Length: 127
Image 1 (cartoon, rainbow, N blue to C red):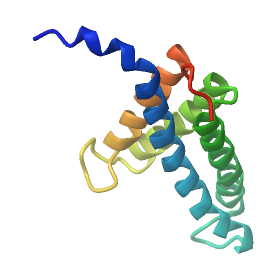
Image 2: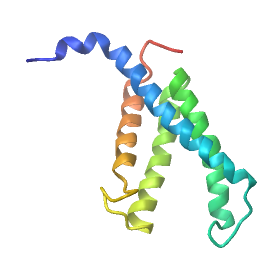
Image 3: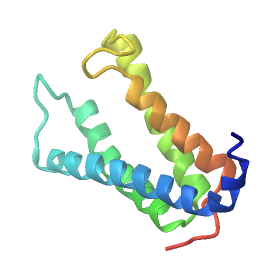
Image 4: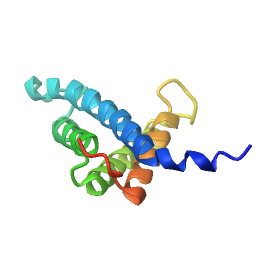
């Protein structure tokens, strides 16, 4: 059975994708806001701490951008950069396998979803 008739729901599908991706980044960005109270340590050197602080802002801003459909392509492109950095760290620094505990399979899925938003945009439903 051909499912091409579902194309009439493409704007709803893009809205659902935006809400899901935005929620993921809002939650993860909010979790990182606790890093603003931390001081550098052996476990969290100042460079990494500053990166986490930056990501707390970037992830929340990007999440809000995709949820509300404001500069969606640019917000999603920024989130792609974050996901590329996360995958790089997991693959090359931590040597995590694709499907391991805290592997990078979810990062790749989020990367792909953000790529769809960069290419297709927000759709016509803007919150």
